[in-house]
Image 1 (cartoon, rainbow, N blue to C red):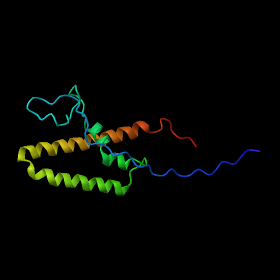
Image 2: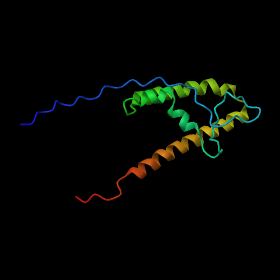
Image 3: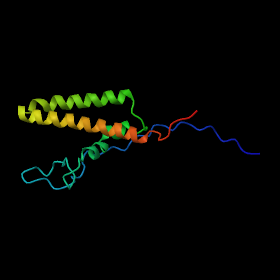
Image 4: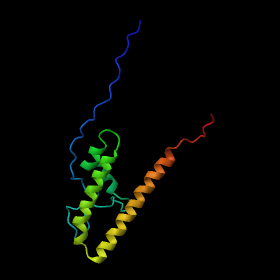
Length: 130
């Protein structure tokens, strides 16, 4: 007679290890630029490193600890984003503000395109025939 297995328990949310914000730069900083800066680009200068850095940020690791992102975590991230925008925006002259605005918008477009492409690629390849 086979033993009945104990009912499986839902795994508890595992606390993520604290993430260090210190990420090694992909390449040396250009002349005249602080070596403490993280390069936005990879060593070839053709790919963004921002996604790699973002995945190592404590806010992302904490939100992903249970494998899902809930509305509360999205709202918390928006608060962090707005706080950083309020801190940075007054420090920019008009030209820098325009450039950073364009950068942020292009980054948002890129992120949305990546998500949509991933969803499209993950869809079932055959039609359901019930």
